[in-house]
Amino acid sequence: MQFAIPALLVVHVFAAVFWYGSAMFLVRFVLPTASAAGESGELFLLRMVEQTRFPYALVGAGALTVLTGLALLDLVSGNFSPAFMGTNMGIALSAGGACALVAFLLAILFARGLRTRAIGAALILFLGLALLAMVLSHYV
Ligand code: HEM
Image (cartoon, rainbow, N blue to C red; front, side, top):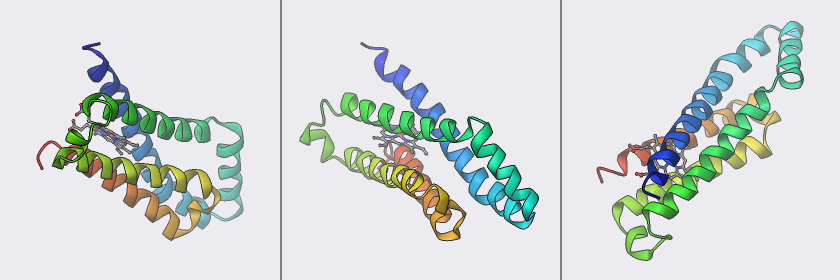
């Protein structure tokens, strides 16, 4: 049991890094470049979405981040005990988790809308806030 937290943390951080990095690369570079390239860009996107595992990898990393995050929060908080959840660290982790859930829902519900600047930017913003809250939770 004593290895549960470090083991989950390793999976959580790797999944989160992949999720955030891929989402950032997609929204900031791949989608705008494909749009600017016209028809060949559309073909490239279609091939990437339909003939590679990229969409599954992205959603899978998001789901893994959220699930390992919830399991970690359960473990570090002693089953979400109010005594821990009310501390600054508990509040920071919960706020980060809430931001991550919003980002996950955005990615699932508006997958096609990610090309819209506002939705792509919102996804990156919420993921960034989640990351900040997780890292800063130790110092608040
Ligand atoms: C529902 C979503 C999430 C929940 C409930 C959650 C929960 C947690 C918890 C409880 C920890 C602390 C573990 C410990 O100190 O032992 C943690 C650490 C961490 N989380 Fe999350 N997390 C979520 C999503 C995310 C996302 C989206 C990212 C990044 C984009 C992220 C990045 C990190 C990082 C980098 C750490 C390590 C922080 C450190 O130790 O300095 N998490 N998370």
